[in-house]
Length: 593
Image (spheres, helix red, strand yellow):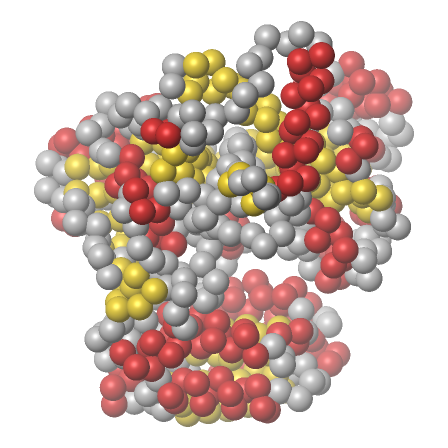
């Protein structure tokens, strides 16, 4: 794959392969996936040397990703463990790789050891800094990008991450030629809709339409303008509070750029949706406060606690570095907040998204599904934040995040709990806490899981459902590792439409790859979905539930790749692990938007 590497001044775009075994229509098969990483030319050692002591102590909040030099193992740095002296024997004993052992053995005593979290299996590992390569992510804060020297060339790097379908296919063809030339026992023909028509579906086959409902109007969530339809049809459900009271807003200004016109456009748009706005206060943050973390935290805490309680704080900040700090303070005081970054000012397109976010965070429901999922009463998303914190021997404390929606997609409730689990699975007691009989008895429930259900956990869910006479339909949604799907014609190779699905079996399929996003440049990564093989649940209903629940994201007019049941799951889990959580661990406001 070296010949496909693209080099820039401060980083490289590296293409890598992932090969997986699959059984498709009872044929042993392999999927070959190509993915890209931006690899920094700055060593981890040099990067760490540029961090202040405070940044090193909070390195987990920087969300820095790394990759082993000796394998495909990668993850996010959660903390600096210490220096190699005193840890060398431990690391040598844990390592089974001879190259890794050699590096550990030769490294100096002052070399730094970091802990990384593998976000696939949720386990943590310890590495010395010289055994790791820095991976650059689009989510990195501006200050981190500056330390890596990539600020000026970022746009080029980001665009190079995306591989066009034609380019991706050419790479795959080259790989197949190599396999064939080495007499690898593989039939190089690919699964296609001409030879295997029953394995492929489109959104029309499900059937699925991207229709949502306001109070008095149905519109297409993809093709039609959201704000225009909300203006004409009214919100599906307004917070009753605003029928007779204005939307009270406190402005926190942390940027020098003039934002008066931009703010007025936001207020005018809210007014056009029949929300009268009242500005309670405008508070300016001094420049010396903004760039001093200790001063900033105390100043924001003082503002939030002492101000007249608004319905929402509207904060203008220079960078997203202040986001979690501010969110933590406002959630503690049970007040919604909307952050607008300086780079967003003058971006007219973002105004609609900001207004949608304000509506969602203040207890309004802009729209729901035009066609409810009639086979169930609820659709639920669950994610377990497995970055564990020890409590007692044999048990772990982990945050469970549950989001409950009615079958028409109306948000019902979120539920957060710190659960004591054994090993890697939820116990029956934890499941009873999350899914109380008072709500779920005799109900039909689709449960979207961010990742896989461990076998014992799946059994516990089904046993609890039986005990309360409920029907639990378990749907695993695996975000990574799927092979791509292509749309081929005589003229070109392009990306298929959203809703295009490849089944792994054309008889009673229980597993599929589904396209849930579009791309003008790259090739969308399908979601890998699996349902219980013993269940009478139909794969079409699982697919419909995922496509439908994507439509209900109120944080942006652009549809997310994931259904709202698990969208932002990692973000919410990371916030919880950093102590950023609402005062009430059960509620009806979409605080994570």
